[in-house]
Amino acid sequence: MIEGISSKINKFFSGHERSIKLKKNVIASFIFKIISMATGFIMVPVCLNYLDRERYGIWLTVSSFLIWFNFFEIGLGSGLRNKLGESLAVKDYFSAKKYVSTAYAILVFIVSILMIIFWVLHRFIDWTKVFNSGTYLSAELSILLLVVLQMFFLKFVFKLISVILFADQRSGLASSIDTLGNLLALIGIFIISKTADSSLLYLGIILSACPLIVLIIFNIVLFKNEYKKISPSLKFVDLKSARDLFGLSISFFIIEICGLVLYQSSNIIISHSFGPSEVTPYNIAYKLFSIMSMLFIILITPFWSAFTEAWKNEDIEWIKKSISKLVKIWLMIAVAGMLLLVFSKSIYLFWVGESVEISFQLSALLYLYFLIFTFGGIFNMFINGVGKIRIQLIVSITGSLLFYPLSYVFINKLNFGINGLVTAMILVNILGIIFTPLQFNKIIKKKASGIWNK
Picture 1 (cartoon, one colour):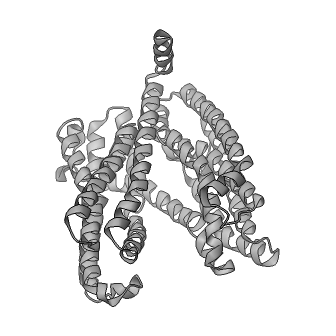
Picture 2: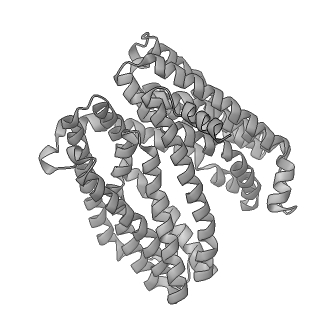
Picture 3: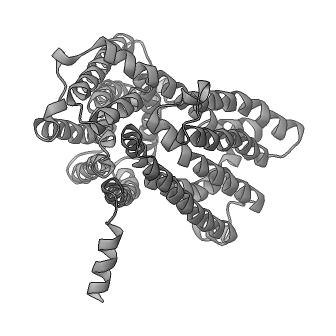
């Protein structure tokens, strides 16, 4: 039996070198994601035990507030991932070093400007009004934002090491960075919960500093060893490399903004149209079927840089086989999602009890939405990897412009309720699964021209 298991393992890790690397990274990413999720679940009761409910709620709001600052990265990470991936694929370490050095220099410049602006504005902002908290927290909130935001900006720069790992097809190691940061933070919070008085400031410092410390260590260790050839240097900061990076970065940035419109505004629309209480059933159903997306994203993320390398080396057959395998995996995800749909009523009952009623129609529509979303992701990974994202950019902009009018019509004119919102989400995503497979076929057959090849 042991020999049989060993034989199956060896067979699984056989084949093309690129495929073997992908399999190892997918497994490693999956393991680290599971650990990270478990850490997140444990973190909630530990934090609640350390803080009172109001302070913990404020921290969650502060965390959401900080996420919006990610857009100052202006898509630079995605641009670097492609250009660096191309350079590493042909072992052009000179160009790779220029791209890395230029990316770090640009982010240091952006972060410096943001820090100066924040330092000037900070003293004029009443954070208790921003976060709707008691005035007795004024001093604590002021210091918290001052400290936490500075560390958040520093993470901007040091997080580029994760982009470099993704570009080098080492998504497993990249995933370990977030997991280690979360584990270190959990240990830190547990320690202060036993040794210090309740403090929003202490919690914020630990949750911000621990991931930053891990990122700094990874930067130092990797650039002194494995990535010494491409370590950032002021001498290699290059304006032409900056233009190359920004050429893709701006497009990726616009796509990310469109994604925010499509995927992050649903709660606001529901709250405005039906009241805050109706956000709950939508979110519960959304979280259940987002399992489909979560599993699929773990599987397909390493393919981005693998497609970059394969395309650079003109390994068309490997690309075709990989897309075929991803479609088969998608079909398995579709079957798993169907099982979730069939048993959704029982799952909701076990999960949240009878206090929240969720219609089968809403569940079915969300299943269809995630089915379309994940299918489009297969071809988007290839298109992102080869950097020909003009069609994706147009589709994203068109979808984001159509989303609100469609939502309004389905909700207010046709009286579809929350189902109308999800229907609008489905319709705008259909554009993607029409055009991206078409573009993939044109590119792979060397028939792409004009906008299809940009």
